[in-house]
Image (tube, rainbow, N blue to C red):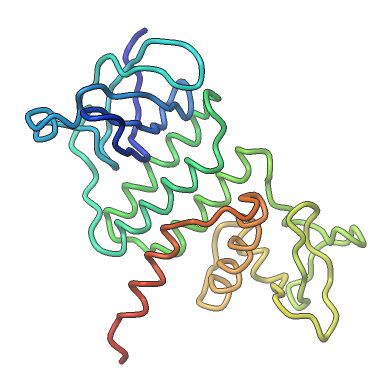
Length: 236
């Protein structure tokens, strides 16, 4: 097969000298492959099989697990430092756990590349992550309902609070309800503009709830890394 653009999402040791690698490819979606000999000392030093590194690669074989045939760097890798690196690992883990195998998502691939570029540029990571999460859910067929109240069918009201059900959408909340999001914050997410500290905080909680629903209870280890980092941040 011809070389295809790809990124490594995750790799782990396999047998004595090889790796099991999850990649996101532009033409074939998420692919799991065996990279034979990649853990040998000489190849390890020269390996381009690293996260955030744009690649050209191909493989051979059939089924869910194929074998890497050729790989080369496409361009310089994205340099994610500190918090941006953790954000990148979070994106990768989401893709590994939510994307099905062998379903091409070229728009999502391009969005992922643009997201890495934004993280490298030290743009607001919270906003970057929320917009990528929104697009990922839409590409998976889980697009958010951000226009109308799922109970009444009425347009969302900026001044009202809503409970968001991942499988159906927002419902107007009563006064005692907790874990709500305002119509204003939902509008910010729909329009992808106007964000402020309050709406970003509410949208983060919304996205966590929705993503947890589709993960079906599977934990995200990158979230644990975030929590550990924040635990040891000096208090101002």
